[in-house]
Image (tube, rainbow, N blue to C red; front, side, top):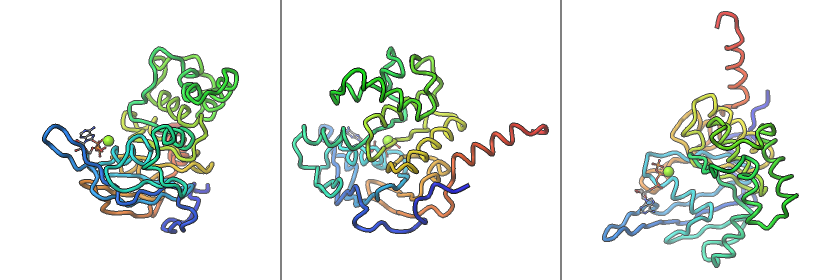
Length: 264
Ligand SMILES: Nc1ncnc2c1ncn2[C@@H]1O[C@H](COP(=O)(O)OP(=O)(O)OP(=O)(O)O)[C@@H](O)[C@H]1O
Ligand SMILES: [Mg+2]
């Protein structure tokens, strides 16, 4: 089976294919008298259609960087460039418009509304985008079908497994048709089988052309991407292609094969 690598590993993306860039990004939080330097000068280019894993110890600045490149937060210094446009100095409304059109988020803790069905959870970003009711439910249903949950539209989050809840969250990230999905430890709260499913969906979206940046502490999860960037104390310390990229679809087949064997 073909691996979902769009390009050979290590092929640097040329200027034209950079869709997101952080240049000299710092982030300093002030907590009373204390200053926390969460990012200390990060330069990072993400290529169109790439799948990238961001790794690093707890507190190294991964989520801070994700918030900044996802336009949820602004850098203290430096700039963020989205599709060749400098966005870090945009007015709040303009920045929100770029964010809503351009990026989808997936979080470790799913962040679903608990008394709201899967379908309504996925419709929510379209409510904010002013999409009409009929269109909303059509697009939300399609997004849920895309993550294999077409038969769970009316379920509440507590009627779904963790892996299914994360798939609802992925559908919610997708429903606005973003160019990039940012996933902060998307498998952190899942057992390994559900984690493989979620990684399979992220890889599938990536083969469909969506750029994916994911944060993980898990080496195996990280190797589902084609590139691993490591951050330490707010600085990028390595940036390398993945030599033997893992395919979640192949891992899943291997698990099914093992389970199906009479002597397994
Ligand atoms: N809102 C905030 N106010 C003050 N300090 C913060 C804030 N958010 C993060 N920090 C600090 O910035 C540093 C980086 O935090 P960040 O959440 O980016 O780490 P992380 O790499 O995502 O860690 P983890 O793997 O535990 O999620 C930490 O020292 C953290 O305490
Ligand atoms: Mg974090």
